[in-house]
Length: 90
Image 1 (cartoon, helix red, strand yellow):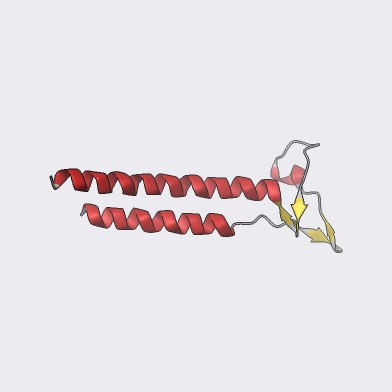
Image 2: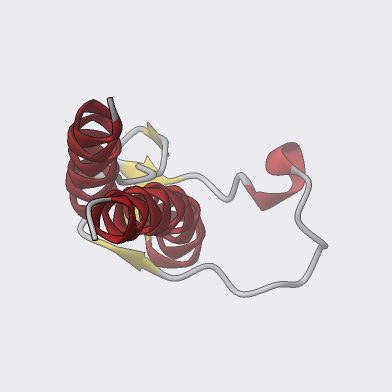
């Protein structure tokens, strides 16, 4: 039973890290120009917006960090279950 838990949480961690690696927040464009959309998503007025190749770098980093946190938590649970399984077999 613990082996199944280890496998499931390992797959969840891998999937979350894959999603983190591919997550992007694209910046909307109007007539070929980047739209300053910061106020519509709740950011404070006057904050800098860094756009590279049509992607908002700061918002993308925030999104990727949330996916990384979930992946790390799933990996932690998998490692705990594996350690528990090893200790019960002694």
